[in-house]
Length: 296
Image (tube, rainbow, N blue to C red; front, side):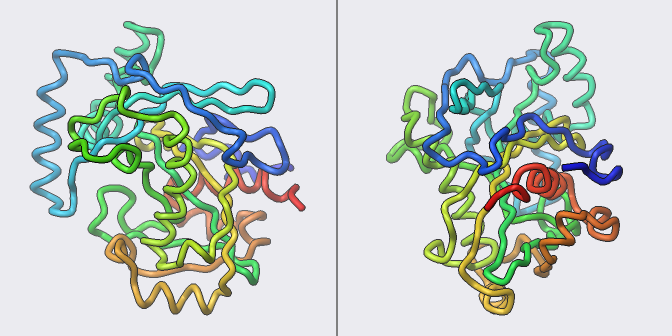
């Protein structure tokens, strides 16, 4: 499918992986290789700067908190099975590397030292959903001014898969890769997006289809930070979703309003819509336009 010029050439996003199958990838077609060798490389001269940046950001935003995240190093596909190569990182390192004004320096240093521009970056794996209602509309959220990223812009429901959801009775800061089951990590990757929809839009998980992976998009405004983008169907209509959203869920503070867009407008990616989207939403829309329209 041909893409509109604005979408195809937008510098905000790149595609790390696009599902080659018209039906997308279900959970049984995905596996993980998790190892400390996929963790962020440490640049000793920069570590104190990460602490300083984090301290400053916490003073500016009381909603910020640190937490363990999965770090994506690379991906591979063989015989129809997609493998995520994952390590561990945390949100503090993300703010101090990918989101730092020094990110270009870190990328250049990574290239020089390891031939990998992302080696010194946290690269936490995010998740996002192209969520479609029963009557054919896609769900977008206008982000509040309280969030750390893309405040005030239009986004898709999303967040992060959480290592703490995979292990029990271990303090989050003490989680290591050896504590993590590969099967449970894959399960968390797919179930976390349903949890984000539940908490942000206030839709019960029983009303949601099983997620289909469309691909992984990179946010170039945060030095290529990657997000796995899914397609999810909802059994509720626009009006039912709107009413649930207005009641509010656990993460209602992260957005100020809900936006519904006809499927055909998403596929055509009209300029008025594209201009309002933050990079994570652009990645989801682009992958949906490339993969999902061929379904059914």
